Length: 118
Image (cartoon, rainbow, N blue to C red):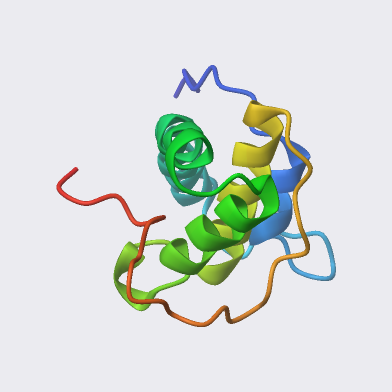
């Protein structure tokens, strides 16, 4: 059987699914599927972060923390480790410095980081 998957998954994402012994904790197909979701979400959030930056929050760190809080909500559909990776990737895409992210950020009234409706 041929492996037609052509996307290079960065080591930083493999680390999300790697145990202390360096072995994947999920099947490779699942890791690839989750990477696709997380990478797409980071790219989608670029526009939202830029809108927040120009309209509401001048602080890049504050924007990234707010998005992380939204992604860390149980209903976001991503794990806490994926949420942190998405925000780190978003910071990279925006060429912003990523703040230290809280393991369990407080849930705010506005889950700005959680995309709604698709």
